[in-house]
Image 1 (tube, rainbow, N blue to C red):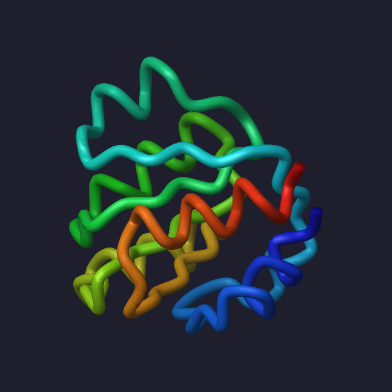
Image 2 (image 1 turned 180 degrees about the vertical axis):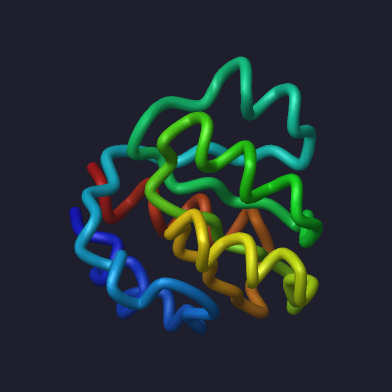
Length: 110
C-alpha cells in the first residue's frame, strides 16, 4: 500500500515531504521508545508514535521507515520538521490514538 493511501484512509495531516507519499508501506510499528524502534522496526514500516522531537527523524532515516505518524493531537517541533525535510521523511499527524491508528492500518494492510 502507498503512504498516500494511508493518508487518505486515516485523514492524516501531512506536515513534511508530500512528495514522499508514493513510498510503499508494508507494515507498521508502534512504539514511543526510540531504542525499541531501532531494534525492532523494519524498512518500509510506518512508525506510529507520540514523540515529537528531532530524534524521531534520525531513527526513521537509519531504519528506512516509510514515514512517521504522530498521534493524539501532538505536533512535531519546528526543528523536527526542518530535519525531516532534509532527510525526506514524511511526517503526518492525527487526533486519533495510537491504538486507533494501528488498528486501522492493520485492517488496511491485511
